[in-house]
Length: 156
Image (cartoon, rainbow, N blue to C red; front, side, top):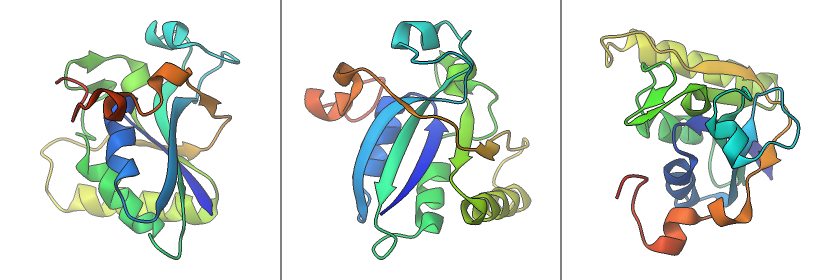
């Protein structure tokens, strides 16, 4: 099993999408990239903790490649909007890949560069590609939130 951590806006929708990818064995929503230890949802929502809402993806590399996970990540959000996805605004909603090792770092940067060069987006891609930091699991009521409520996205 391998791990990947992605931030692409509201973590509920990101988790739901990744949970449906064949080869993904588990997902968990949480917080990463900030300076506050053991953050709560309320603290992260202020935008002052520095944490992003993220999804920890545990996957079987024999069934799904990290490259496929990157394709999924890019497809779920607009990577050109700084600290914003749809109606959600703040640093906690930033587009970010927290890489686990140099292999993930290289693949992430190459993928980002190829997408930028493709001309798909008029504006520059602002996605951060940074080393993984401590992942703090979000409160249980956030885990599988949309699935538990039969919702298809964060804004249903």
